[in-house]
Figure 1 (cartoon, rainbow, N blue to C red):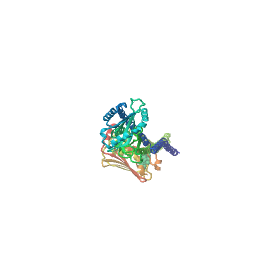
Figure 2 (figure 1 turned 135 degrees about the horizontal axis):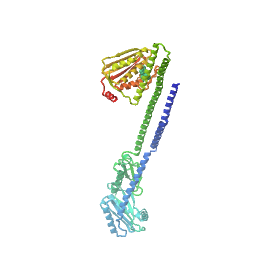
Figure 3 (figure 1 turned 90 degrees about the horizontal axis):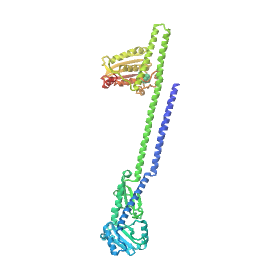
Figure 4 (figure 1 turned 180 degrees about the vertical axis):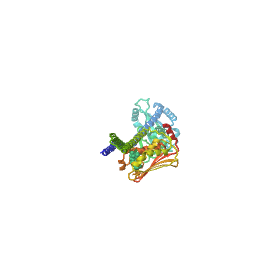
Length: 563
Ligand code: ADP
């Protein structure tokens, strides 16, 4: 009945443990992992990082365009402020325009269009370049469009308040070039006069100074973003033929080759140029992939850690539960063990008290039983007290130089009668000439009594007890041998644990607390020694307690401490 209840409790606890671990830890952990996992999948599917990087790239390109425009506008306005009035005579106009060219080597041509005509001046030192000359001539021929369009241009320029810049492809003796012309109105003139000024930027200056300068500025300002991946920027003239390789007009150092990730056409000035941006040596897609892979890896490791933690928790909790079960067994065992000798003592004492026992021999037998049972009670209570001291860390040993042979002999003497009474063949083999060793007498005696008691308790058919004390290789050995039920191999390491009792039916039917051997081990280790068991089930067991002969300093320390 009792057993059933305990099993039920055990089963219930295990169920509760699994339920708690499952509901409180596993379920939220699994949910968290699942949510993270699906978020990562969505992140990967929707290319979230790539999109964010591209948005950032767009922003960088917009800022780049603004800066280039601002610089170009400011330079054009500086030139504009030096422009001659349309009312001056032609020589004066030419002189002033030449002066502007001399002051601003970044300009290739300057021109003034007014009601009287068109004055174009070009950098004199570049006139030796055939293409430059052709460009100059072409501009003079082309000015006619201003005659028809001039009025509209002036109106537009008045509206936008800043110069307008537009570009076109041209040629120089060293290859293709890009030319950009800023057009403006002269602010001091009334709005209804059709007067236009123009300044054409030198292709070399555009490429090497203006464009390159701003691009480099953008890269060095932004290079610390995105995990330190430096960007690369370039400006190119989009080819009307699609699919042709993009050839940068100006690019930052790290551009290398390859396609831009994001492009933007110049919107305000410098049409039809466009800008491109990418990472040096990597791509947004590759960065996104790396991030996703790394996150998956971290998630995987975390999941494994959670599973590991759960297994560990389950292991620890199971162990604690097993210990709790052992403890409850212990309580019932001990109560049982206390009750039996007490009942016997009471029974025999009452019988004696009633005076019904007349023979002296019978009385002697009853007295002996009472003494034996009280001794058993004392031994059990001593074990429990020692155990509780050990558990509380308060157990102290008192080491004294001791003739150990005598100690063993005396201890056995008080048991001899009981041993022989129980029908045991008893073999005692104690070496004389053993050196005195510092031990706690009471503790060593208790260890021996526990071993002897076990030998008596766990022997059935062949009742034999052997106790041997000898010295071997500087170690004192105390052997307790029986021909009893023996201990299965898997139990041999566990029997020294507190409360542990083997599952043998004989053990089950024998009284015991499961504390004896754990005390023996504690006592032995406190003496710097060790306890070993050799056993064959059905054949018997041999417990060997080894104590070092040379007293170690730690023992002396302990001895002093407890003195
Ligand atoms: P107890 O004897 O009170 O159960 P112990 O700590 O002394 O506790 O022993 C633990 C267990 O080891 C015993 O329950 C028994 O199963 C086993 N054991 C100890 N000594 C022997 C022995 N000499 N022969 C067989 N089994 C033994």
